[in-house]
Image (cartoon, rainbow, N blue to C red; front, side):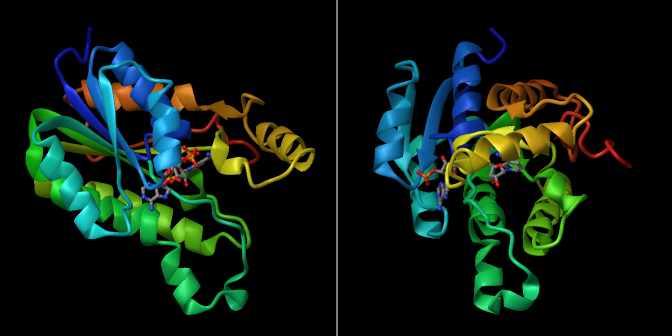
Length: 241
Ligand SMILES: NC(=O)c1ccc[n+]([C@@H]2O[C@H](COP(=O)([O-])OP(=O)(O)OC[C@H]3O[C@@H](n4cnc5c(N)ncnc54)[C@H](OP(=O)(O)O)[C@@H]3O)[C@@H](O)[C@H]2O)c1
């Protein structure tokens, strides 16, 4: 199996894309450690994964938590960072600056903390995969800060690829993906939103978490890919352009 004998850490691995990546990496032979901030989510996620997986409660807002995770894990082969919190579109004029800064906390600064403490433990041949989003290149009104943080992750990816070489650093740029991130939108509005998001793609589909996990597997396995942002969006960036 492609990832036999490898150790993979997925921060954000209790839900959505991270959980799908943990499942896919386990199926490819890896031992996987998942981490997120809620004990309840961690327990529920581990119940769905094979016994080769373990987990830890880690809040990426807390550098000490992140450092303790990597002290515990020791050497690893790949670090996936998919942690992120739901963001409600909001015009900048209505956004206190502290709230605007907060929008970078988990998605950007959490990734910085994870790489700071995780990269030195990545074995030769290993890699790091971060997460941005198509909002980085096609924002809509009210998403300027989300666009800023996603674009910042993409710049960070290139900088870290140069800094940590030959450890490879890449990012996945997802389009709209059906995950629990959308749970705060109640039904039937959620179904209508998913239909509208699917209609804005070339494939006329909403993305699925296992399609992002397939991108994670590719980026972990292909040793000639680094500093790359891989778009997986059903052609949403092309549609209507
Ligand atoms: N779904 C989409 O359509 C979409 C599109 C583009 C980009 N993205 C981005 O892709 C990433 C993954 O999204 P998803 O859809 O898989 O979301 P999800 O299902 O909500 O999963 C997010 C994960 O992040 C963890 N997390 C949140 N805050 C954390 C913190 N402070 N410390 C540690 N872990 C934390 C959550 O667990 P806990 O709650 O237990 O901490 C959960 O495991 C996010 O950054 C999201 O913004 C999503």
